[in-house]
Length: 225
View 1 (cartoon, rainbow, N blue to C red):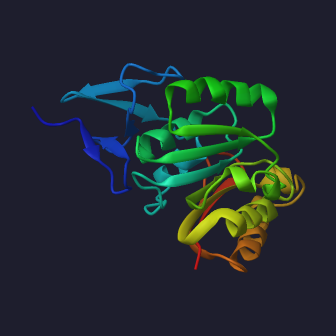
View 2 (view 1 turned 135 degrees about the vertical axis):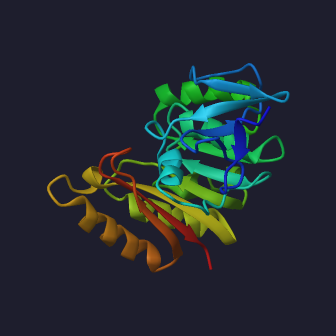
């Protein structure tokens, strides 16, 4: 019998035979915190990663091949929210990896705390990503900065946190929400402006508009020189 689940060209990601569905290998088999579909094969369990619920999955579906996340990595996640995407990155970095999940909303951070009680590689932190100096002593240098924050100054927040925490040669992923910056202007124009701001300090290695999976969003992937 042929395998239904195969390794994707993106590290730590898997796909079905037709390449239509994405998966991560579940670090905690039997646990599905978001009622996601699972596939079990050869003693392993894989969680379906929905590109309409996650900008990271959407970027992969749209063709991003180097997202910079590897097993064992240390990741800073800005805007962790209820924890959907961070749960998949938890699978990707595995038990040897570590995730710092930042959010400023106590209600959603409570959900993240419940998730972290089972997924021990997640450390929830209640903090404002605009002020990395306030959590600087609680976080080590990281291999990856991932940001999904719907604020007008999202580019500045990303660059500043990369300046504080991202190791040289590390990767950054910025999910840009155009309407949070300016609802009146064209999304592509805003994306280009954000890209230019980011390029002043970081090397852009990929750029994907996420339509129609995520309306008015793009993903900018960078590497720190």
